[in-house]
Image (cartoon, rainbow, N blue to C red; front, top):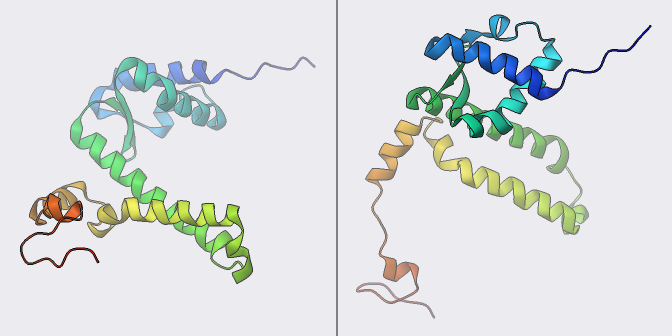
Length: 167
């Protein structure tokens, strides 16, 4: 029995991309976007689109309200990015909880464990502002506008009226 060559990611990606672009901003549900591809080909094709096609075509590829869309619609792109960043934060928390949080205290002095812990901390810190806003970029933007800006002199360690300075 002859074996079939696995379909290249770019072939699946081009097939999916063309179908989704044709649908416009209405997009397509998964069952229509998948076309003749298998579920695995669909996943590889989407990865190829995000890794290559979006840059080549200068267009986003997003999943919003269960529909795949090739678009530069700002609201759709914001909604997709917010959703994916919320997912990333949850994934990082799970990685930490299931693999790093319960290590014995002596393991925390291992340099590679320290790097992994620092990386998790950095991810949490980077996403904290957005998480505190419920992963709503609009709420986060409004909160950022309300925050008083600190003096740049204080940030550089210079004395300002009423500040004690460094000792």
